[in-house]
Image (cartoon, rainbow, N blue to C red; front, side, top):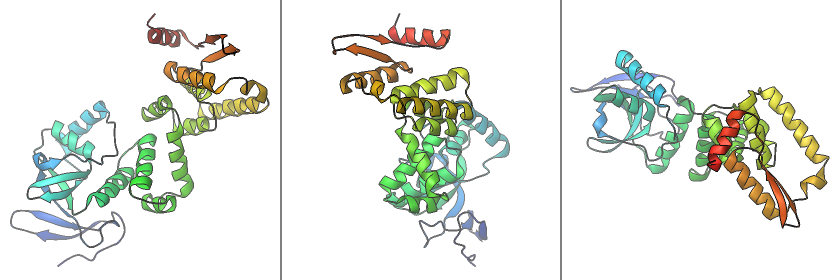
Length: 297
């Protein structure tokens, strides 16, 4: 007898179904596929292909080894999700971290939810399941939101409904993608928090963003102190429009490029675009050595 079907995401297992060679469970269908409930069973790891739509781009090797050790002791607690491509051939939808750790742990089989899905449905499921169930960093969440908007043709309101977030939360994550690559990497590597990053977004000058970013790292600034510093910088700039308008667009572009390269705020002072000087500030001996390494001195 089939279990009564619920419509919520992840509200529990249905009735157990028995087969001669496999015990499978009937699970609740997720919003993307309402006509078929996925089955769960043990499948061979060698039969699983990687997920081409994987939203997670970075895996901490130490954490992966820790998970592998846990799996050796406890086994897999949360099954992965796959789609069936053909007989004895599957493609991962979500759970790559669990799959990689299981390989490290020496497992030959792994429990998995088996679903039917086309590429569009698979992309949406992979993104949403990872956002909801994995410990993604803020940048990975932002990139996943962006992909759902662009590749799954969702509006921000629809996206908020899919992931259970309000529109302002979604917008705050998407704004992170406007930050310079160095700051995005720092956010990815947990060198600064989401609160720090949101403060930096207010600054419309890339070089200044990078300068404050370096101060956060070198001085261990709290979010509150960062917000206070940013308010002061923005106020100073708004009260000194002449200084901000001195540089030509060409010199300003070069200054941004140098600031991004050195990871600190580079100052270029030029007279008639012919003569001038470049200054490279540093706040510690370690930062000076880092800059000298970049200059190969």
